[in-house]
Length: 130
Length: 213
Length: 283
Image (cartoon, rainbow over the protein chains, first blue to last red):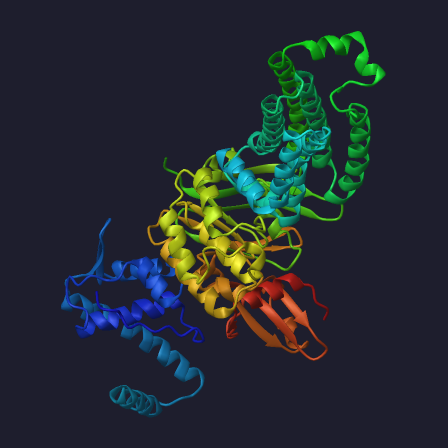
């Protein structure tokens, strides 16, 4: 099994299990982890990342709940078949929620639409570099 | 329990090498026409069990052994068995040597008396050991040992050949005991040793079971 | 035999002349690692002595693997206290001969493997070993008889960071089958932050906290406020506070924090320190 490259940032606010599930999600979406590819066991992952088993379990439970992975008792977890339609819909929902919040916040501190678009453009530029 | 007894035996060979040399010297004395100084050796064998408890306390093994899957009864019993092994073996060894070296049969009585005194020493000291800390017990132990040795000295022979030379020993009771066959005497003494140790063991077990580490 | 919790502590009390372990209750589920934290003298060692049978509780019950007769379960425990004494003249080989008679499931090969891994000599007498080496030795022994519950009391406090990390690796491997559990008490909290699934915090004999580590870290945060600003916060949000003349470092329950306040992430050590300070403050 290839070593999964997941990094954890102890300093940032995001809970560790979320960081893990997010990074694994990214890998699944980008195709780095193919359909039906096995994931490291929760205990192996915990050891690798030097975190608790409950954390990795939580991360996997999140992923399973969102339909990204499936688990076979006694064998482990695997990448689920991708349902692109479903994924797009879910992402759209999340984007809508975030946009609502974004709109609220920008109104609270008086940031214009143009400023927001600038900020988004800058962020995307940074992503491209990475 | 075999683990605990194994520990005692390993400890003996690792820590008491001088005793083995002492034993060899005593054996040589016994084989020759030296006075019955080896009686001291047999009485000393009664000290092994309590010495073991002191060393255990000092090294911390007493705590560690309590964590092993062994019962309190086994922990206490292992000390008694170890000590009794010493007492009985040394007494039997010297009795055999006496027979082989052709000394008067009555001399075996010395070994047997020594065996009883050693058991008395062990039986009294072990419960004391479980009650008091090493330091307090060391004082009590010295006094007690002194007393027992003092009494035992009364039984030490002074003349070669004639073992029994004190008034008590010349009384009818003792004359009868000492004229019995050595084997009978040995078995009787063994019974006394066992009874002493069992009573002492029960007392020690109660004390040990209440102990907090 | 199936069991759910490797360890259950039910209303344990232990009364000494000037100290009391007061009504401690918690459980350690199978396959999990629990960190027991608290200052020196908090009662962690007392509690561990009760669990391992070295001491008797004044009241309450301890259950190991569901069994309330703890002396029956000693074979399934691997115990390392902060000073597991060993006979001074003994060495690894001799101790192996003793332990293999004591434990039915003693694995000689595994024991010597661990010794090699920890760089320990086979036949050097214990009186010649440093404290750290004796500790590693006892850890090796505790891991070599298929114990289902490892209990460690300040077992890593005398070791350097490199070997502590190595031992952490060993622990991760040890629990990899999901059937074994670990209870580890330490006042070096950073050791525990990584591997622990649960954190139990004992302070002056009382149970302050027992919960999943992740939940604890999510729930609590740190705010630094001047004395004036404190009044704005709901008193019930304040779990612990350390006050100086100029500012206050406050441990808050984030769920009770009014909107707009952002609490910093709190480490387990922060939580321990601030909780032990209590939550009384003066306006």
